[in-house]
Length: 198
Image 1: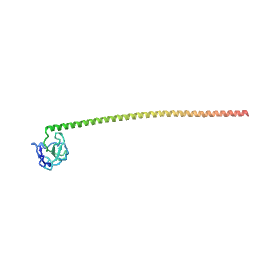
Image 2 (image 1 turned 135 degrees about the vertical axis):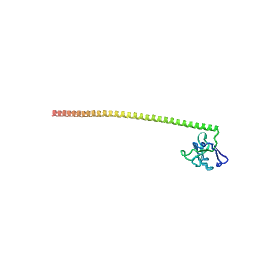
Image 3 (image 1 turned 180 degrees about the vertical axis):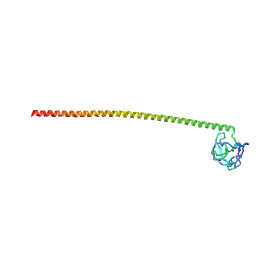
């Protein structure tokens, strides 16, 4: 553990206290949050990381019961760092740790609920999309059926019109023929009358 003399803001008198066993230095570096007042490379007291000997980076923890605690960590990116962690602040009292764990649990539950809500909304949207798509398909089928029926009906009407035109032409020819016959008969009758009178 590390204790701090709170009287100075530059942190030159930070005292870093480590446990007796060496494993306490090597730790999975906790997730951290950016804090403008406490970030960057530690310059007050040069504290190198265990494996690389590089000056440690100042961070503020943002996970579990360590949330809000300041620490020094290996400055290399995740995957390349050595996992060296040196805590600046003492551990929170157990009541604070419990409160932080409860808050994180509530956050995870809320996140899980939001995820479930989003999944449910996605399912509803997918269902509505499928419904609208099937409605569109049904509308297309109905439209295609109506168009097909109309085409069939139009073809029937055109066939009837063609037949009627044929009958009309026959009637017109018959009428013309009758007219010609009647004219010829009248002409012949007048001719006969004229011949009888002369």
